Image (cartoon, rainbow, N blue to C red; front, side):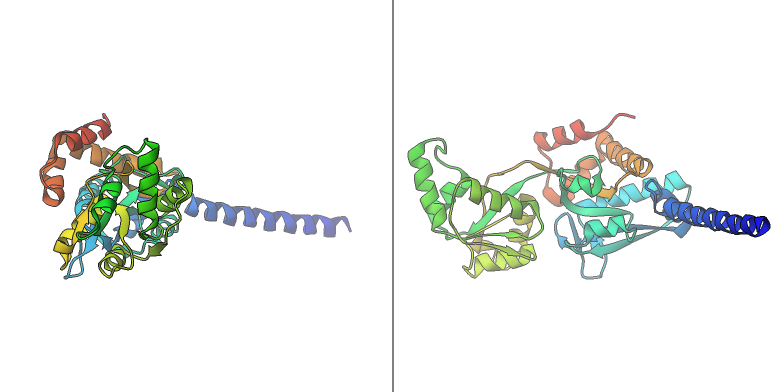
Length: 310
């Protein structure tokens, strides 16, 4: 009996040891801080990008990726190659949708996300961010033939703290309709402002900036809220460019950044070092100019402030 009991206990202990070993391997494979190891093992650096976020990231006719964020990520890829000692490392740009982009980071389908993503506290629950890459913010697009009263209110002309002006502005806004792209900070901001200001007006969420602009052109919506740099670029590229106008106003300040998996300080250090060197060297001026034109002093100050020291 004692021998049988000892054998049974030994079997249980052996099974438990096997379970612990398997669990340890699984935990190790899914633990944070493994991005560089994964890239080295695969011989491939997978950069996710949104194909519908021009001028930050988009797909060109030949199928490749282009844009301001893509140019920065290409420089980051060069740094990853140097860090790993793999000059021939394969760099693959993987298109991801607005809905899946953060999940693709967390399940390892991509190693870095390049696009037009605003840094928010809510998003930092799910992913980590690099140092900021662009001084973004919410803007508004309208038809060029929008009423002067609507354009004045959206542009902020007048005295918003004056009760009479505010009442008149509310009446103007309630006579119009508004749109934002679902899943963006603009969508939540629009809903919050409507509630806070007690404005009762039709609102709609769309799946893309192109869809939002089409709603404005079709007079289904009067104002499209979104990242101002994207609105400006989309209006410029539109076949109906003369029928569109973007208000000369930022409703929010929302720095954009590259996104990466949480808990990977080693990889984030590589990314931030690459960006900081671009900022400190002045190379950012040429990259910025190709997309947005010559950077003004405000833009240059933004990059100086966000460049980390070695």
